[in-house]
Length: 305
Image (cartoon, rainbow, N blue to C red; front, top):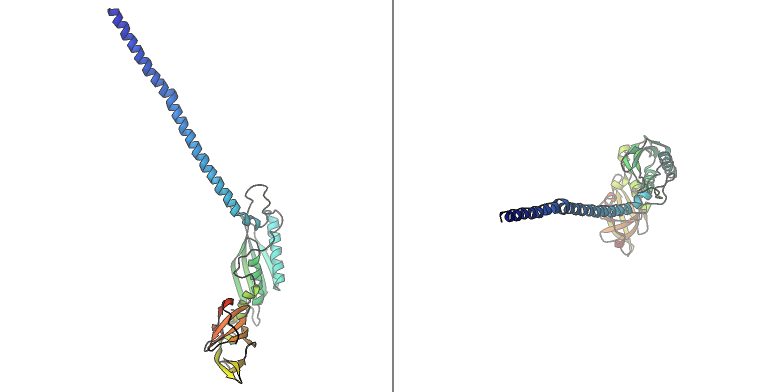
């Protein structure tokens, strides 16, 4: 009997030990590794999801930046410098600027682009410089004017111009992309100006901001609209040039030339008049000088009486 109890006790110990050992083996060699594997799978799936999202954002960025690649300078540094420098000289010649000279430095390479710097020297009147700036900013290239210096030439209407220009070449997003080209400048134009008509910017030259540096007097600053009168059934505008007390009488359709102000009288009201100048409309009130006229929108063009 005693032996039987001993055998049963041994069997119970063996069963309990087997059960505990089995549970331990199941936990250590199956359950815990499987849970760790599932965690690694979940983490991998999250990384794949983040990567897919990043790739989507990258593709959207590349698509949004595609126009930038199409406006880039050539990728070959020698071609970029020589072709862009030649383009600058062509534009200077087109704008009739004298003594053109263009110098360039070695490109500076950053993580995403090659940056070129050019110095332009030339001489010309303000209207020709105005034209050059119009052509520059109408061009398609990724470029900008960093600094600009204008110095009046003694006893002349000309100005010495010195510009510092930066231009950029952007490597393609992926190898084999057609843009940017390796050995030619991009073509076309890029709309970055408020108006696509050069006439809208000719007022800068007509105003001639450098006249004070030459000590000149602009008659537009001293010519005032003094009265509007009816003479023999016609409306006549009186303009007085105060430095000489000269009176200019004008009717609708007459052209007024007073210093930097050049315009055609197109409307006369009770207390104001409208001039057409440089493709824009300018309103002037009795008592004000020509330099105080302000632009009005084309849709506000008054009906002639």
